[in-house]
Amino acid sequence: MRTDVKMSRRTFAAGGLASVTGLALGSVAPTRPYRYSGATLAPPTVCWLGINGFELRLPAATILIDPCVSRAHAAPISNPANVARYIGRADAVLVTHSHWDHLIDVAHVVAQTSAQVYGSETTLNICRARGVPENKLTLIDHGHRFDLAKGVSVKVIRSKHKEPVGSSGFYTQVPAGLISRSHYLCGEVFAFLFDIDGLRLLNIGTSNLDSAAIKGTTCDLFFCGVSNYFDRPGFPQLVHDNIRFKTFVPTHHDAFLNNELASYEAEDVSAFIKKDFVRFKTELNRIEVYGEERFRELVPLRTMALV
Image (cartoon, rainbow, N blue to C red; front, side):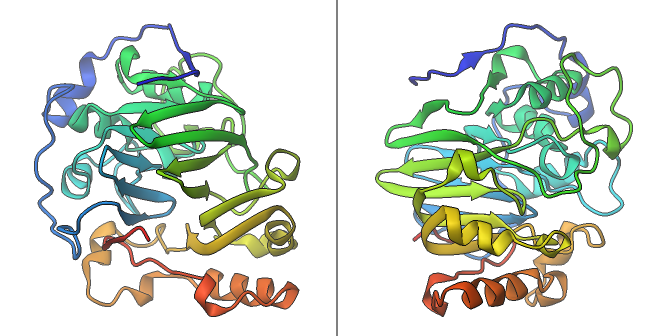
């Protein structure tokens, strides 16, 4: 695999994680016990894991973005049983920022799948504190481009978190303890622009962006965080002014703070989806009429064709 990102060199002992999960680091992942609808579809497919979590199953690799599957009243660090239930194979994990609802399960995902983690200095230092081996950590930054597999490349774009930012700050060293979700500091924030055999997929994991870094970006699929975007007016205008997309796919608009992920196994999940997307779409269409055919809402835990 070719890469022009910098590889981190710090070493951190990984002894505790395998004993917690019951899996040897680098072991083969089990078949997912929960067989959600569409699991047998041929790639390329997408499965929304809730929040900004995605499984992209491609012909050459399986890529996870922000794979947080611990919810509600789970232990403050992670729920390995949920990782075993909802995460199957993974070759790469990309992390947009380091808040708990994006990063908290990554250490268990690596233990289960032996995936490579791509993240900021803060993300990697949290992973070190959680026992992820150094050779599984790849440091990325704004402007980096790298290949994940044949026909699959990624551009890293500087981004911003929705304001006000909770648990703000950075870890320039390995944190001493991570006993609370608030200890998962935001760190650097990235957007990811994938090129998948010519298909351009942009992911922004929170309802804000850095217009100086992203203005003029074009994509086929725009996976965009819309949760509580209305806390600070103007996000629909920012999207309209800076991104040219063919299809808009909302994310991070499920009621994850109040519901375990198992709730999403129900046939009808409408009770767990907030109305933020409906409100966002209405406001965006007031700026310019986009048309219903340009919006696509995924259903949590259902695998669907990517295009």
